[in-house]
Length: 121
Image (cartoon, rainbow, N blue to C red; front, side, top):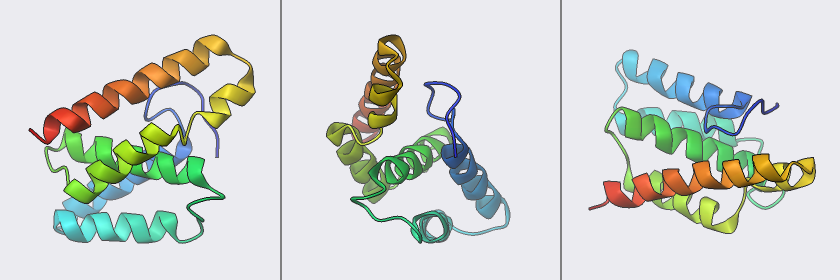
């Protein structure tokens, strides 16, 4: 599991979440069913506290995928905002020592948070 850039879909986990969500919708599952399946699959081996970064990638990827399809669910929106506010996925960027990448990732997450907030209006 790695990241190759600062964008939302610039890591394996968020790409897998998005692709799985889209595939399940194409198979005819409802948004609720697809979301439940994606979360069950991707969260099953994650501990919210120990794997907070991965949990954040799962929720930000799912929230962005749902936004792209105009199917954003409230619980996904709220959880993604909560994780962004915690700085849950910034640890990787802080540890890299690349201040520019850290600031760019922070900007990307804040832009997503703004879209998520706006989607609630």
